[in-house]
Length: 234
Ligand SMILES: NC(=O)c1ccc[n+]([C@@H]2O[C@H](COP(=O)([O-])OP(=O)(O)OC[C@H]3O[C@@H](n4cnc5c(N)ncnc54)[C@H](OP(=O)(O)O)[C@@H]3O)[C@@H](O)[C@H]2O)c1
Picture 1: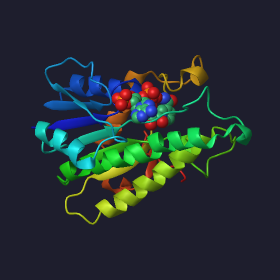
Picture 2: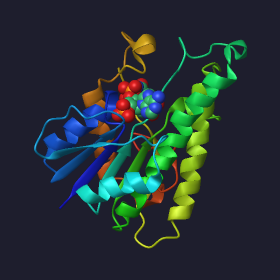
Picture 3: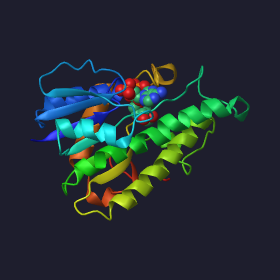
């Protein structure tokens, strides 16, 4: 049985990925994991409650294994732009407690979610895409601002890099990549990108992310790339 998994399936790109993975017919089974009960009603979708910041790794993994012992493709789409009124424009707006909360969601939760699913992905051909963001690139930062989001995504990239190196020591390990999905109109971005040219809708982003994952080269293991597969500077 061929299984795909989305962690962070409640909204935006994650929800669109679940729909797309079902529509392609490529998978016998799609697991939609998130903090709340999934609204995806389809015979090939299994909803799983999963909170990577609140639960033990073994409890979460047991729940996934009970549905499918093996996962061929997974997307981790957890992320938040802000936990306050808006992302910081200036360092004066950087609040330690809020920034810590954003760090937990953007850097810790996706890495813990990856820890949960990677043992189920040691097939020799599985791919795990963890959604990062180009604004988390230090080398590409030309405008500043958005301190907590930028800093936490840079930290996520480091976490994924370490995890990929650790995983590479295992036989038949999955290909693990940090992926910038491209600017997409979702709840996360709506206040900043609505009406802008070149902004994708979630279903288009889901389609191109899945196309990327299906062709993902093993040489991209442990790298930071965009949805077209181009390497991004750390
Ligand atoms: N939209 C863009 O233009 C854009 C650009 C670059 C990168 N990205 C990245 O792409 C990913 C998906 O973004 P999106 O635009 O689809 O955002 P979204 O619609 O807000 O969805 C984000 C997902 O993250 C989870 N999440 C949100 N807040 C959380 C919290 N406080 N604690 C734990 N989980 C939380 C939710 O999962 P559950 O409710 O299912 O648990 C939700 O489905 C994010 O990592 C984002 O940084 C997006």
